[in-house]
Length: 158
Picture 1: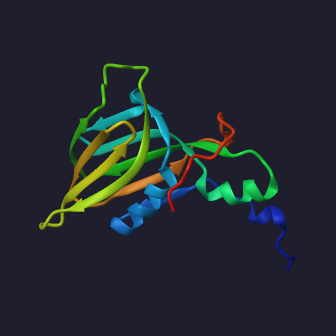
Picture 2 (picture 1 turned 45 degrees about the horizontal axis):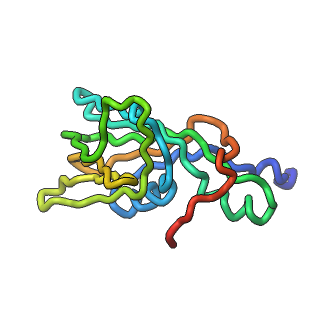
């Protein structure tokens, strides 16, 4: 049996699921400061699915990039919520096809009956509210990482 090599340990694309509020906090941390055009939001009521194609900062790689002196990266990721009963938004002009939105946080507010609301808090006082039967989210990287256009890491509150 051969020893593992460094190449065997290389990072794979993220593919995470969230089935409760604690899991959703992990996805919220990884999607903080993700940006997306308003045109990359999709609500499929018959499938009870809401999806966003995000350009997210790779928080999981930040320390390694700093330590190794390499550029910070972003990656396109698909953030999908299933079991969605309704979607509403505030401060989001869907008719402005050039509008770029930025995710600040994702929160879950449970109801007494086990359902609840997922709130995507956006920069500039915007928000997207999903009424859900339960937390059922996935975050999946769908492209290779690319150099962050700004060359800088966003400020991340710890």
